[in-house]
Image (cartoon, rainbow, N blue to C red):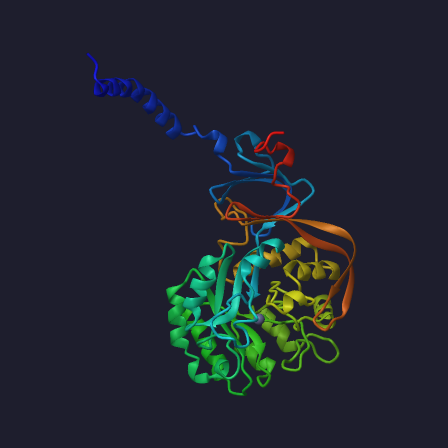
Length: 427
Ligand SMILES: [Zn+2]
């Protein structure tokens, strides 16, 4: 006579081999062949400066990483295939100069000045930003909790030598709160996020703030970012104090509170050429008022090209001539820089500037931060910080942005299926 317990046992005895067979087939190498590749990007023109690729390549993405880059990857192993014929594929862009910490205080930067990264990054193909010292060692933990941990964009940070960051005058200029030891201590606590030290707003003639920032950068072996609103400190002294790998931003501007890189005849000053030879990197840092065609174009023609296209993204600049990183890149495309040179200055170069060589390329094993662009031809205008226009015939536009293997922006639905395939409601 069978009882319910016996019956259950017999069923289990019959099912166990089937279950084991199923388990074995799932674990066996190659069994999950249909899902080997989460996304296959097919037929795009890849520009990857680190890996010296400038041509047609297929790219396979799995579990958030690049697993294969090859002229032809079979599509039957892919869960999803995105056709990128006629489009450019690049590593996700890196913007090394942004302001994305809102903070608790309504000072110069905090409160009304900064923007939320995800709102503006992906639509420009940007997957990594570095905040340019909006926080200092005192406010960094709040910045991390409030923005960095909650953003899909990878947010890195330069720490302001001013302990509370960009809180405006007078606290931002309080030399007593510029502590090299505390700054480097906090850098040591967050080595994956903090990439450097920033010296920014200081209107005195004392070199102490600059020297403390350089000291903190030296202790931590990270670059010094000079976001130079230092009207009483001569440029030659600033550049001579900077070391190889340090970054000078707002490079191509004429402003009353800073000395221009060019002399009154538009020639590169000799000590600027020396600084470049020494390995100082020059970032655009366009901002609302920090990029002028009458400096950038003569500098470009004399070989002083930007090493990176930092936007100085904040609420004011994004609605001015700057707009976004692609607008700056398009300006250089129309000034005469090749698209390949532009992409390397938006990806691999800034990754090296931040000493984050895990980023800015699409080598096998790298995180799948990817951007896809088209270059539109037509009649376009570009505006500098003084409101002057450059006419151009090409504009770079985002088609698709992928962050850690996930589509986070798709301008024209190239990764999506037709609505006619939607079977949720049948009529
Ligand atoms: Zn800035």
